[in-house]
Image 1 (cartoon, rainbow, N blue to C red):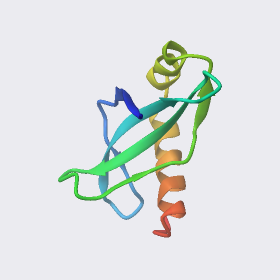
Image 2: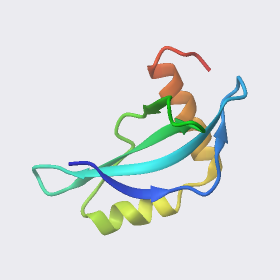
Image 3: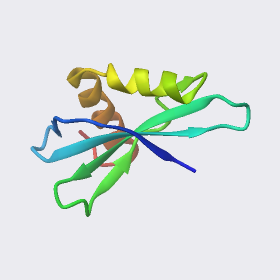
Amino acid sequence: MPELIHEFKNQVQSRSGVRYSVLAYGERRNDGNWEGWLEFRTENALDRMRTGRETTQPDRNALVYWASGLEPIYLEGALDRALKAEGRGM
């Protein structure tokens, strides 16, 4: 079952001007490793999308550490990838 790993303080903005809150989620896999992804939500939380797997870590603590070190430029790139995957362009 997915777990909220980290909620980022700053929002990111798409190229079209829509602002998104960013959350990191993770889930333990059958092999014991954890995989993590990012979820983007509009201010009213009616629109949300997620990336594919962004990382695989050996345990939950390593996933928390990974998420806590993500810089805004990484989040912006992840938003672009999520928008592209949803067919929303950039």
